[in-house]
Image (cartoon, rainbow, N blue to C red; front, side, top):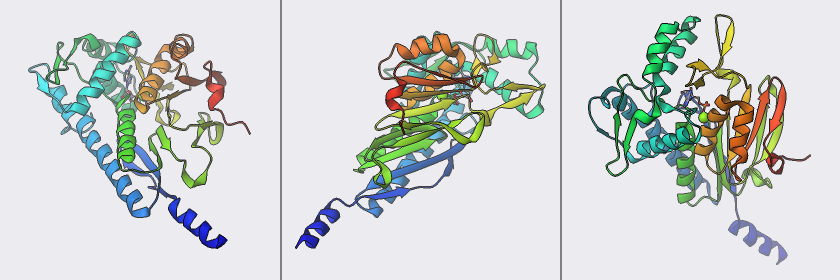
Length: 325
Ligand code: AMP
Ligand code: MG
């Protein structure tokens, strides 16, 4: 009798954790972990979420000459270009972040990013002349968005958009939304360190836990975060440094100087959504710790962990996310 009761309870409350393993998307590695009442449901929900990510990549990649973003980059100075709702949402959010950060975040940084990408291959810094020409085409105020018709226009010639600082976060949020819609009990989506969780943690753990890698030592963890129904992102990625003329350069550019932002080793942001965490990690890398932390501390729901010259700098309430052992 007792045994039977236990069986009924477990079958009603059966929880299966399924891990997708890593897959190559958006120029990086992604992983989805879900908790569901049955395996078939879990596997098809994971596939649906990856399909959404692949669709967003095909719209927003600036590497893919056939993406909608590449079409916008080629045409938007010549004509008004209608875009997919998701692309419009990201462009509108990016402009908000430009306003909030007083121009530190700027998706029109494309021409400057392209020059630095070439440098990464050649090992030589771009010439000041080339940088000046590229910088002249940058300016988020000249990106004209029409929310009614969902169209984009460039008011400056040579403008090119680069969504590398925000699109992964947006894709994580959309994938999480899709997992929720599939009726799963819980899940985690990670696209290149842009992570968000919801609901029941995997493998019967009491919480979703995320280990933060030490930027100078991949083998060790700086700390473990308890991250239920929250997002986290890290910028200033040590794996994406390039050595140019013997100096280290990051892939994040300060639009004011057209030079790479390299004062901070890494910036981790905890936020309600992955897009917020993604954009803000890029922003704080550029603003550096004083201005960056002032911005983070002005928002209740957002926290930061910065590594600078081997030292840890934390925002006001980060402790509430730390796992205490
Ligand atoms: P993340 O890894 O999220 O910090 O994003 C870095 C990427 O954002 C770069 O590889 C560029 O594609 C893009 N990016 C670089 N500088 C900026 C900037 N100032 N504002 C917005 N996006 C940027
Ligand atoms: Mg970012």
